Amino acid sequence: MRAVVQTRYGPADVLRLGERPDPRPRPGWTVVELKAAALNWHDVLVRQGKYDSPLPHTPGSDGAGVDLTTGEEVVILPSLWWGDEESAPGPRWEILGDHRPGTYAERVEVPAECVAPKPPGLSWAQAAALPLVGLTTYRALFTRGRLRAGETLLVLGAGGGVATTAVLLAAAVGARVYVTSSSEDKIAAARQLGAAGGVRYDRPDWHKAAKELVGGRGFDVVLDSVGTWADALRALRPGGRLIVLGASRAELAALDVRRFYFGQFDLLGTTMGSPRDFAQLLRLLDDHDVPPPVVDRVFPLDRAADAHRYLESGRGFGKIVLDIGM
Image (cartoon, rainbow, N blue to C red; front, top):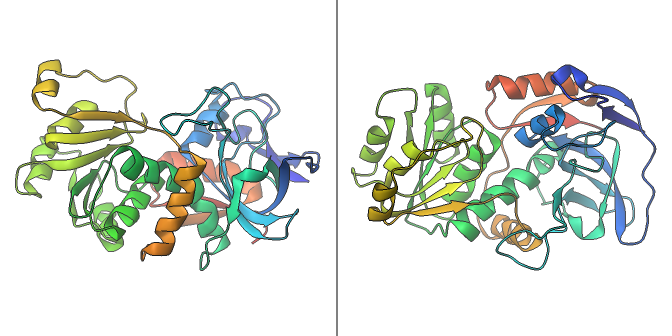
């Protein structure tokens, strides 16, 4: 079968179209014939060798296609072997595309429990764009963050997959959502998705400007996928919750400990999610009027390197998808 194969770690150029053996069905597993695969920042880290993926390797966590065992149109849950505890993943947990071949291919083998019916009304590209960021964002906002209707949410960033998904999900359940960005165009685009407004994070004291959007008191919840905890905490109201799920801008954070405990803040770490979280995400999509995932651009499979370069440029708004056979 055709697949994107990297034989070394490095820049986007290491991603080359090649051939890999077809996966074969075995007990407890199924093979999905992929129509589309979506990119995530996680794929960039895999490509760079951050997760010690075996070489040669095919990356990719997100995908949608046809389950060759049942003939159903499905989306893939990329969170493998979460375990029995909902509070955190168990020792066997891994992400699809880390240590086994991923979705940048015509077919992929996954545990049978890791497929779910493709949500009705979604295109193949939109369906492929849903699982990883949808699952991650659902767990962050609702399982961990306890976000409720009527509360205020500040999303750090506006253009990435997590940010656009957070705006869609939070607005759908009745939260008031705001974003930060270095681009007025991206703030405007976030408003089109349901955000109430936003501020430029590249301006001094942006957290003060953000708090003014909600009357000066601060936000109930701040979603930080970039790692700027100190600024994020300044945007919270007393007793607010800071949810951390990424470190794209900073991997270390210095906190004012006294200010933290006097502020009665909650600091919540999270990543990916469980099968139960995924089922609840799909139920939320059924129960609420949630627009489809935002797809910024679609590349053919043989241009995976170009897709990675575009992702790393930061110019996009929403998800980037590989067309495998749509």
